[in-house]
Length: 163
Image 1 (tube, rainbow, N blue to C red):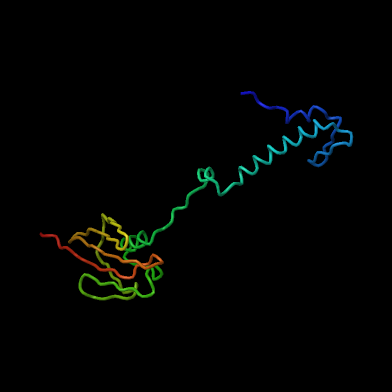
Image 2 (image 1 turned 30 degrees about the vertical axis):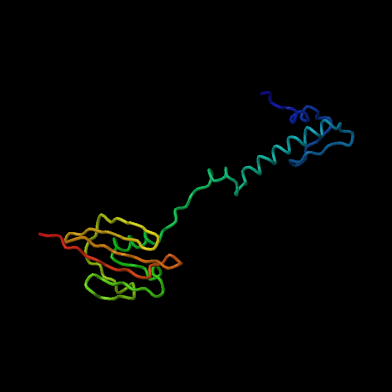
């Protein structure tokens, strides 16, 4: 496949143009093939600029840096590990039914005093299960979500390990 170098032909004819402050100015008696050559080069230059600025094409996906979205379940797991939850994680009206039978409606009331490890998440369409292990037993949390991906109900279960 032969390369087309005709777009650079105009540079050979310096008698037909002048360069001032980075701009090319052609004289009135410039032949049409010189002007066409210049137009080809500018069209290619513009195409390269457009390619670099493209955003909504299939190929531009390759060049985008993907920002990892924080899922609400990730924030819930982080809260389990840190033993505290942010109020904005939960829906305005939510209910946490704890293992010991308490019904909690505020994130600040939630108390997880045990050190939890080996946290696993099982997701379904409507319900998410979070299993966490502690020194004394396994915790299982069942979460239901609202339309804004905020937990509306959390049911806690606890399995005591035999000693």
